[in-house]
Image 1: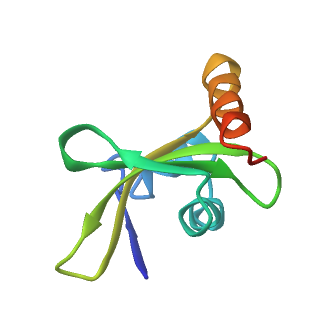
Image 2: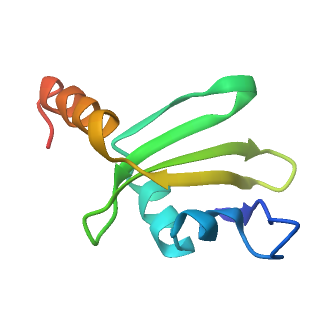
Image 3: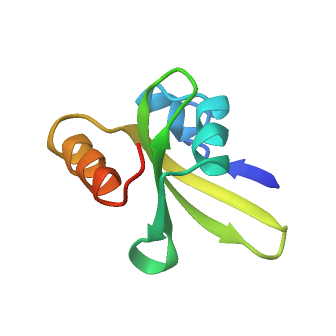
Length: 95
């Protein structure tokens, strides 16, 4: 799977860096997402836990021309969104 990242025009680096997320963490979530659902305007939202224990939400689109994924952004789940995710996982019987 080829993964490309949205590059911030001001910094020249992947936008995920602005949210203190590494490429390795993005790959953790995309390979083993607890949830992967449809987002706005054809995007997808993957939510899960990294190997280091962080809960992240990754917004991406499928890139069929290049047989891969284009990651738009990502951020850490905290507060109510994290509690809601954990509640949904418990209802499914998974932790």
